[in-house]
Image 1 (cartoon, rainbow, N blue to C red):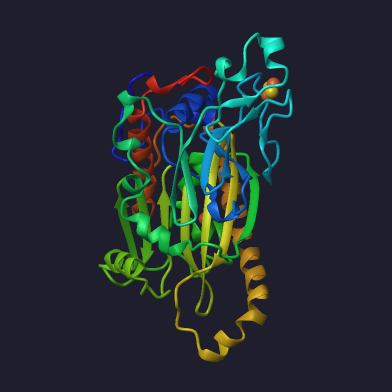
Image 2 (cartoon, rainbow, N blue to C red):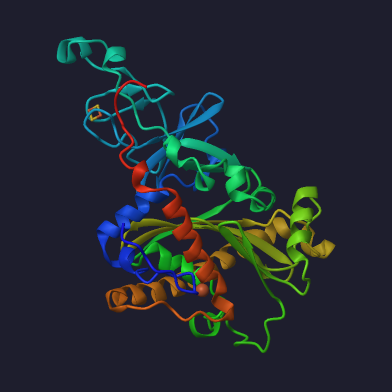
Amino acid sequence: MAETRHSTSGFTSDWTQSLIDPRAFRDEQRRLEHVWTFLGFADELTRDGDWFRASLATRSVFVQRFGDELRGFENVCAHRFHPLRTAARGNGPLICGFHHWQYNREGRAVGIPICNMVFGKPPHELGARLRPLELATCGPMVFGRFPAPDEMRNGATGSLEDFLGETFPILEAMVPKNERRLYTERSIQANWRLNLHITLDEYHGPAVHPTTFGRHGYGSSMSRHRYFRLGAHSAFINSDDENCLASLLAGCRSGSYRSGHYFVFQILPDLIVAHAEADSSFWFCNVLQYSPATHDRTAFRAWLFTAPFESGRRRFVQATRPITDPFRRRIYRHYFNRVVNEDASVCERIQTVAHQIDKVPMLGAREERVGWFEESIQELTSATTAAGQGTETNGPR
Ligand code: FES
Ligand SMILES: [Fe+2]
């Protein structure tokens, strides 16, 4: 890979390459497949044989429950590469729809029709297997990555807990198991990094979200804007308190945090977890993911649910929640989708001129985290060198 020049903004001089060049995009994604990436929720896989499909650095993968454990694999049959899972979710044994090869929980092909007749040996001698994922969980959230070769065992490939650092206990507290989640998804015709950039920017509200986030204008000061860099990740907390991150962390660890202010954590590569007020004293958590699909397309998905923390609601308001919550959830989703669509339109417009961009952006104080994100992506993609490419799919291990 050609050497790139780092600017003070965190952007490299060739930062648009993977926005416009499918080959540069593919190279970037091959490097990111060894980085922990959110895949879905374990509590959606309650019965033996339940599975869901997901995307990991553009590769189709799936996670399946086998008894009391979860296993993940690339969604490509070892025989002639038919996808094993052809829907978003389901239940059932791992049997390919093309020639009925059946795999076990280790991903080994153990049932192959007329194997001796057509391959001249039994399945165990053929040694065909699926490409496995490493999985780890934070609360009900399942993360996965393709195992990195030994020479790449570095900062980008430690445990999930190492990778998430201080954000681990916060995510664990924000995302409880078995919470009723509203799901929404859409496709965005823009590169995934443009989509992440806009979520890391507190500057665009009045221009892009004039009826919601930006309705109060630009404001006169940034005294409540608290930005934190947490390893590869970052956070924005809207608070008067300089020690708000330490308080939030302590409150999440002890279970004593009470909803009181907006905050958002951006977890590399493509995950966002936010805590936002819906209306007076009602707080929601949003889990958002901008999965890279192609150099100019992103698959967006989001889960919205009532924040699990106590808040200062009056007793009467609290008591009427079973009646009012369904309306509240619907209204919240309406405004959430509006904001997502407004952001997506900006990214889609930038994508149309991405081939004309030949410099790094000018980042103001409310866009600082955009530079941090770019810097961290550079670090992750250079840490996981191309040496990790082409991990074998077949053959005995
Ligand atoms: S491609 Fe899966 S069994 Fe043939
Ligand atoms: Fe926005």
